[in-house]
Image 1 (tube, protein in one colour):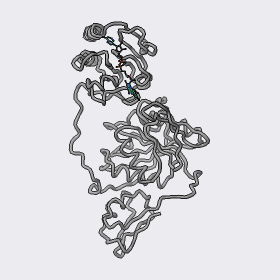
Image 2 (cartoon, rainbow, N blue to C red):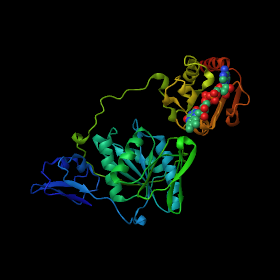
Image 3 (cartoon, rainbow, N blue to C red):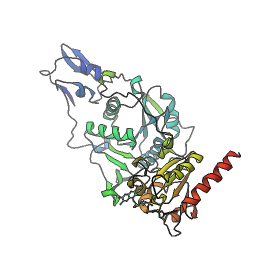
Image 4 (cartoon, rainbow, N blue to C red):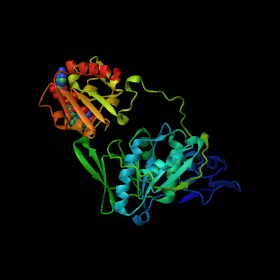
Length: 394
Ligand SMILES: Cc1cc2nc3c(=O)[nH]c(=O)nc-3n(C[C@H](O)[C@H](O)[C@H](O)COP(=O)(O)OP(=O)(O)OC[C@H]3O[C@@H](n4cnc5c(N)ncnc54)[C@H](O)[C@@H]3O)c2cc1C
């Protein structure tokens, strides 16, 4: 329920500008909230007089009125990010089990053309909001629009990618709606009609199963954790266009410049087709050059074990594993990495694993498709040279 306190409202009009759904007017010197209101809360953020209040708390929640499994669709460089397809695949499984629908939420500028991809990967219904101010991700407008949609349509489950954007957006939406959120889930399933959210806890030493008592049930899932399904090009989703009007002045942050990554880490780990990773066996920060040379020839991303990161040989953003990035490239080359379980959980989804280690008993060989027992200081440069010659001759 939303309420305007007449004694506090100074009819400044900031709420009118902030409302992305055009639901507020000033009538007789007071803000009046119309039926278009979705309870997104954007007006509360800007009301300096604290004249607007939303009451969201429900004592006895009627769970049955919350329906469907929603996925927040993330866009990067004008395309749907792969992780969105992974989440749609999981959402389909959950929705089938619940007898509900899969809905995607697509926010951006000129993005309707991307609906066919979301449809092919499992969305039954797509909510699309287009506005110039949604071209780049900003916390304020994305939160307002999403909170508005959720308040109006009452989904049962909302899943977000645990990317930089998802990790910023999901908690904000959860806090505004006063509902729970489970971050970085590695498993989602249905138990007695409720969402069982599984995630590592206590530094990864146990797996915790979490159930939300609030609705919608919300979770973030890391890229490469869920398997992407096969697309069905003939599937057509219902498209629901949401008219929004964002006032740029209400956006409290400004993106001044997007700085590109350096060439050595140009391919993001979680999206790379090939990854060459180095561990403690590399021996020194300087010696990582042999890993970078091999990665360069293969146009691969460079990864590292936690030991290599802890030793300061590579930044944390390079870490593969349970407390780093989960990857599932076509080829993963592990050099001087022993294969401890915390590393394996982050890369065992790779299609082909190649291990180079001087210890024939190293556990990495238990998951490797191809293993080379030898000194990486000899093997890696020899491999780089052979590949360079081979690729040059093509
Ligand atoms: C809660 C928790 C979370 C963790 N999260 C992660 C994580 O996200 N990612 C991660 O990687 N680890 C993680 N770890 C740490 C993990 O348990 C291991 O300690 C770590 O993965 C070991 O890294 P490593 O394989 O590089 O080093 P080591 O285990 O020391 O292995 C080095 C390997 O290099 C080989 N080697 C040495 N010299 C050469 C040579 N010249 N040629 C060829 N081979 C050589 C050795 O035979 C050895 O097998 C976590 C641990 C905990 C407790």
